[in-house]
Amino acid sequence: MAVDLLVLAVQDRFDVAVLCSSDPDLEPALNAVLDHTWKSVEVAAWRVELGPSARLHVSGEKINCHWLDRPTYENATVSTAAAKPRSGTWSSSSDVA
Image (cartoon, rainbow, N blue to C red; front, side):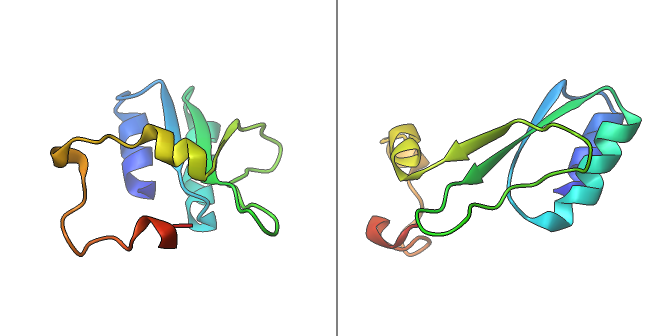
């Protein structure tokens, strides 16, 4: 994901990227895009019900964070057969955090 973010930014393939991750390993790529391009990057991260929620950040930069929770996820799901995961690839919905 980090390489894609950098390559697509350099190739001018987006104006605004939304990273759906809270993995801190992506912070160097996020920092490089913000420092060396005119691109904008926002973050989407899962809101944790108990305890602090994690999000990507870069020192000295204000990055918009879109917090996602269970109701947001459930409202965004598509009910068509094509959008459903193949049998056995996901746990039951009650196990998804």
